[in-house]
Image (cartoon, rainbow, N blue to C red; front, side, top):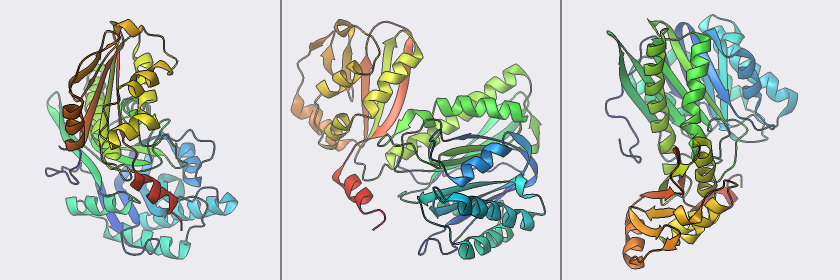
Length: 402
């Protein structure tokens, strides 16, 4: 699937879940309340922001997951319900209680996700009726899922979804996810919001472990401007009626499929970076360890000078090499080489002749751009994804609340 496609043409949905997205009035016209209903108590695991300033929903979910009793996830967009004190915690519980009453379960069986502007009270007179309508309208069809995916967006230009059927042994099941994110992307565990559902059955402990592994290889490897949000959350729901995943080889196969799904979702986020004119893939290899490569890639991805070079289609490779140099990872410059969109621009610590006009044209014409950086002969490698930094990004974020 292209990084700029907005829908998954062959979207498959796992059994045991229903979805809805409605307009409650938090936003002017678009869907702003989404509901994911579990037909039976289901396994849930979550990975949440490490920001010390966090939304009420994060503390609520952390106390509940991992577990095997979840009946639903309620999501609102347009308001983060962060930095709202005791009233924000009360409003978060009321969201869970409203959904639970409609589902016939306890409030602690409902997870809550919020996204939007920080520091504003939720309009509960809009949210609660919206939750009730979402539960009543929830359905198992692709259009229901897409309505929910619309309901979690804020500054996103397009919805972000992914789906695949997974065969393990003689059984098969589905992994499907939705995500949102375009700004405040510099995750230290996840990114903004993502919910992944599967009809493979996982124990809470297994769900927690495979989700953390998948997040580390996907949502933890993207950035837009390096800002970790107050509301970051990735949630995995596993239907209790699905085929169990228990044996080590089964868990390994499921892990690979989940990670692939998460990478697909995560890559769509910097592609939709606010004002982005380039999505940039950064591959680093040759370090002693993967974690060393990860830190170099992360440092390059967060460099404003690297980002603006891509905005201007400027093959200014010195910015990339120097960013690697201040990452804190030791490497030998005379063993370092760099390619931009496949064009060699720096080899074995020396500049190599290249046609700057040709490389610049290549960067300008290709939304998807690649940095390939080799810093030695070690086995370590890592990949990160980011977006460039444009005037539109500054405009969008300078006018966000006014």
